[in-house]
Length: 407
Image 1 (cartoon, rainbow, N blue to C red):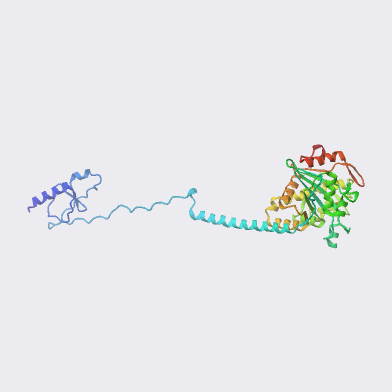
Image 2: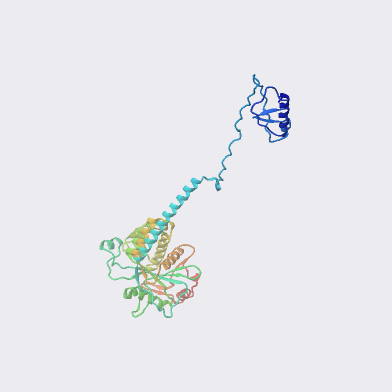
């Protein structure tokens, strides 16, 4: 085949498509370029997929031309798909650490709650129960819930050293040193009503006596019966605390703050307190609740101080510092369990209502008063008409009339 014929054949094949050529004879082939071993016609530049032409290299001497080696692909490898970012842009590892911390925190919190509930249940099991509330109230009735609150002067559980420290004396037997009714109406504000212990009433089977004698004659059951007979108000629950238990609860709370308008010095109550706001420990708090000889109002002045003190104790017992702090809660629960006496039908929910209502009477959501008095000398006589209005409000479950409330 002649050289001219060979060149014409190559030119014809270039028009129809790329042709792989490894060697060729000397001489230039008109109209043909070589790139990477492939031949294209000039018209192939119109194809957008065809790469740009490589400049032709002169043929070496000897008539043989070596085609340039194929270049490695310059196209970069495909990149890995990018992982979607989590919401908030926080790395997965940090979120996992927070979740683990949260789980540990909740687990520890659950253990503490279970421990506190177990402690509260243990303390509740140590509370003494008595049969104080009768099954049949007779003609007595009440709407809402009525608690009888008693501070007993029993000294039976006190040692000689404790009697001396607390200034309780050595009297035998036990009497109701403090008597209060807490009324929680169906709607409206609760009311804490003090009943002077020297109030003269009819005691079933005993005749006309001071009301605190009912406790000495027949214990909690006779005191409840006496109150229902003289007020016609049914009592639902019974709560009692003795001298020693009262001081223990105050000490377990870390003391309670009281603000005194005047200094108090009462030798029989074993207290000497300056005027002004101060923290009272268990011994001073008990003396403050019992003191009456320094006060010209005697028992009537004492019941007002008792209301303030009992309300302050309930308020601190329900404070976040006591309920959230495991140590404070434990001390208070154990002190209460060792000190309280309840009716056998008074349950934990009843005590919750009792404490919550006691805290309300310290603020604007509750009322405090003393049963209306007609005369007070050596003994106390009730005002029958005004006291009758008070007992009617308790029976009907309504708030105490404003004109009966203390200024």
